[in-house]
Length: 357
Ligand code: ADP
Ligand code: MG
Image (cartoon, rainbow, N blue to C red; front, side, top):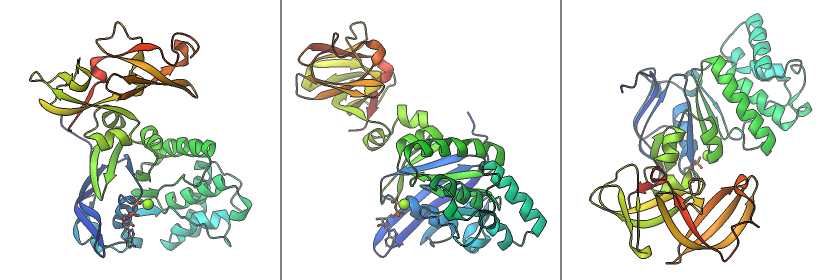
């Protein structure tokens, strides 16, 4: 099916070097209008550098960055219709909340009355009505974060870049603020590129995710595609834990031989015949799956509570292990599953993820 979404930001072949370190390596990326695009990657993978290149704070040695088809490289940072909320955002401590939020508007030369109107609107958006006259020091960490967000939203940039915006917040506040941002964006018509190293954050917030590795995009896709059809072992391991077995895909593309276990299983999605890795998400595996199309026999070696589920480790004949996540609705550890018990681990063909070796 043709993709009818409108590209907003088009990045092609962008390379950034710091001395002899290659931080971005001929990177390509398209972000669509009204999209919340999440950049996910380990520390040092180039996420911040990419935001800095888009914002105009670092000049690429090669490549092009277009916004609505116009080359951004000719514009200094403050002239770009792009705003950045940096990892280490700082509110102006001597200014009131309202003055902080209105800062970008005054820079743009927006009039007094209009600035006041927009500041009130932003305060309402981030649910801080009545806080306009306070100083940042009189706010909690979470409230300060929302002021910083309001400050970067107020000038109505076409694109807002957020670098790990929730990293300073504790768990509850982080979840609340994430939900707030998802709610806000629907009413604003602004596109977002949000950087995180938190896979849960990426999966719950993103329209699409780009997984970065060594200055390149390892894979770009919706959360569902990245989770269910990762391109390689790196992406499979980055988005949720996966059990990885070594196998050989037969000529039919769906039969997978597991030589070290003397077993074979069936996948739903065909892959190229030959050596392959078989990735299995723990939550797609069942213990005692006698009726399941695929199964491997092993011995339970470990059982651990993991909040809403049990994590059961099963060792197979060749010494490799499968981690199975078992919902507590299936019964407690004291039931059928105990350490030392022989069990069968079963799964459906569509739980097989075949990856290049
Ligand atoms: P991330 O945000 O994904 O953690 P960065 O984009 O900050 O990664 O950094 C990518 C790589 O470039 C890292 O190896 C980092 O050490 C290096 N780097 C970042 N900024 C500079 C700089 N100003 N000078 C030299 N090296 C830098
Ligand atoms: Mg960074």
